[in-house]
Length: 515
Ligand SMILES: NC(=O)C1=CN([C@@H]2O[C@H](COP(=O)(O)OP(=O)(O)OC[C@H]3O[C@@H](n4cnc5c(N)ncnc54)[C@H](OP(=O)(O)O)[C@@H]3O)[C@@H](O)[C@H]2O)[C@@H](O)CC1
Ligand SMILES: [K+]
Image (tube, rainbow, N blue to C red; front, side, top):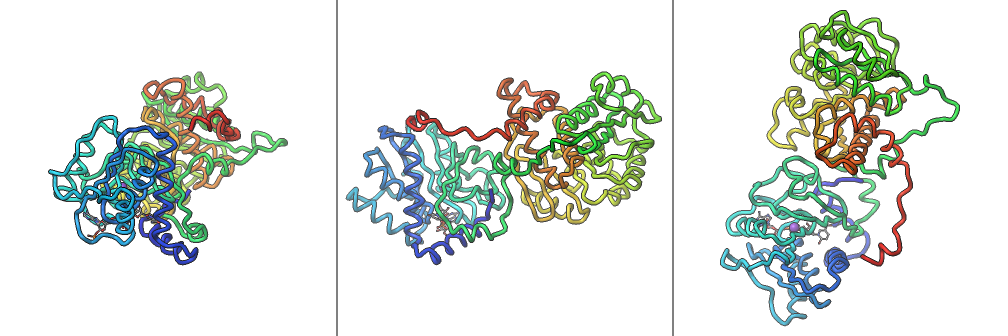
């Protein structure tokens, strides 16, 4: 699914009205009516007071359309206009009049804190104050209104975007944004929903299709692609009946040091579980018994050193190398990486301490093999590209890094984002339980396994990230978020493949009836 900018959506709005002979007013009616249908399906006529807070732009107009339909269907509705300026939009004004026509009185105008209404915890709040037309931070009593609504226990439903949030720019003022319980967003999700600084304002959202011109949407290069099951499924390459282990590639895992052998174990295990034909682990001597005992399927080659990796030699020819998990940043290890990068041709996944080594040594940075996949967590990323002002600045810095070093970089987090030059792929699987030691080691082994199987580096990263999150979701369903451990995630990669490929369940008739 595509993630568009506010500007692109405004353009889509314009193209749709021109090309399909439909007015902006009709489009607003369509949008507001769909929000009404959503709410009506859930409320089923319940006499719970609905408080609709409208701004004076088109987001407010959507709120007015919703209010009119709710009133016509006998709901208990209170409409308030946050009257922060006289520059009301045309479509807002028409719908303002339409409400008056049916209620015979004007909605309540708010001009200061004194107008804030009392709201019961069981009531519903509709947030239609600002949409994607927000162009500065809310101030004065409007900011206070947002804070007042956030203090209420009532359910907050935001129309299009939580008011105060920009669709694709840094948050204007963190204390002036609606904390939505749920957001119904028009046509496409907004980038702000997936970034660490702003994602908490819109933790749950649904997309309302308002029929913007499909051709325009299809031909427009989006800000990002959202990867959910539907997309991930298309990446899967089916195994052939007449195949053997050589067809699925050989992964070399270069990892571990004294006290951190688990990193190499997890990564090697995940490489097998994700489908590699063969896995060899290159480890310090101290890890020999550990890896051979933990994973009899893995072939082990040891370094000359007991506690660290000093030179990766005598290795077989492999298709993919996952390097860095638990290797430390000793100078000898940095030199080992220099030699490996310059002398061994393969598809690389560069993780953890290998990233720290690169951040420490400029010469090593220059040796990053083209098309490598780098998988830093936030701390490692900061060491690699420097600190950032906000999430958008971070994305720009990472894009620049991938251009300069011709690589793919995965920004790990709640919604991991794969970056390659100007392309962004936002992952939707995974859960907070996966923020646990070794989770990244599993992922690097999975990416390497896909590379070894012939997936191209960008696809391997996007697909492995989705599968990894899906495996974590399967573990958490029977275990809780708290109990998720990286080893469990590796053990459930197989179930993730099965879940990915199983047909979507048809909606049961009785489920339909309950809606
Ligand atoms: N795209 C689509 O296809 C469709 C979009 N639709 C809907 O339209 C919404 C976008 O509507 P919109 O452009 O009228 O902007 P919106 O967010 O309502 O408010 C802008 C107003 O607020 C003002 N203002 C801004 N910041 C401010 C601040 N901090 N403090 C105070 N004032 C501030 C600004 O005024 P000004 O900057 O001129 O002072 C302007 O008057 C969109 O989110 C969706 O809900 C649907 O109806 C159908 C199809
Ligand atoms: K809103």
